[in-house]
Length: 220
Image (cartoon, rainbow, N blue to C red; front, side, top):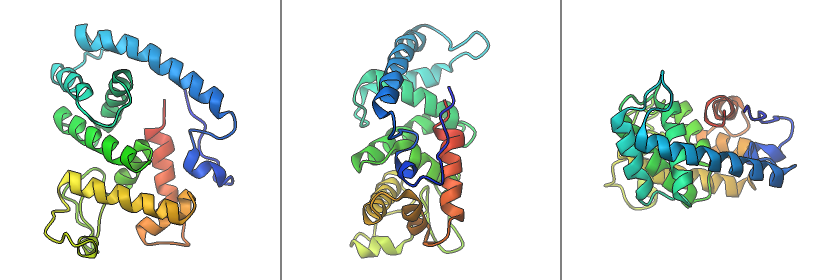
């Protein structure tokens, strides 16, 4: 099922899409039914065999998923965890080859995003644009890690000894900063993303994130 892309002319959809405002209840109900049915099938697949005859599920990935869904990672229930982790792990594979690394990243990202009320898929889109999931990326301006955090933020909050290349530190700060900008801009995602990138008033960076969001992370 293809979700409707964000309508860039309708600012009300920038943060809520593809969750939707118009017809939200119907969309959420349909999505929940699909997730529930998929989870039933997935539970059996995780325990007994491949996703499809031509695409066997890697045994290590199966074990990692089973371990992950039993751990506290910000999921409401096990079915949601199984469906989301497997789906996002497959999408993340072009960027992160090791299945163990993918699951570790997705668990931490899901927790940090939901902790501050962000859609995890939005955070994935931001990371794709910022660092292409290179945990040790450094920009020409000195921004570091997955979400490209500037070192001055550590000084601002008095934890200058923390390492921005650590996944937990980087995701915690990046998600917190993005949430702050969303609140500052009254959930105007385009302006919040521009602030995050230091390019308020310009739309090149926000458009890149929105494109990644719709083309990869919200695609069904």
